[in-house]
Image (cartoon, rainbow, N blue to C red; front, side, top):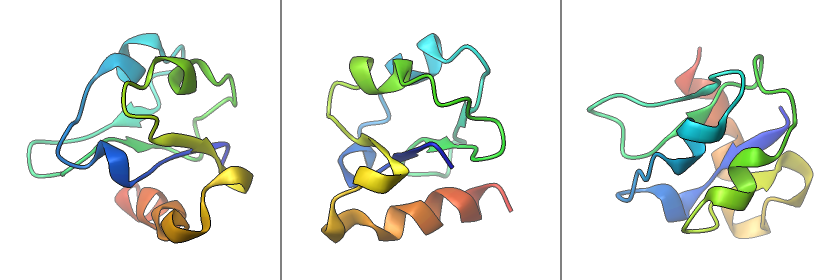
Length: 79
């Protein structure tokens, strides 16, 4: 997985990241509290990071320790 969406996205669901993703790997549904990045489709371009208004998107290796659970949360959304 290249990038992970974390806790600051919960309840906000701003679609700026979706609009800039060149491979359409960011998804959600009406019942989900946030957006998720498909780890199999992400091409590690980082466009989403720059446009996120709540700074919720991190490279998998730089996710803050208190938000590491979101790596698993993102993966589970697509399983």
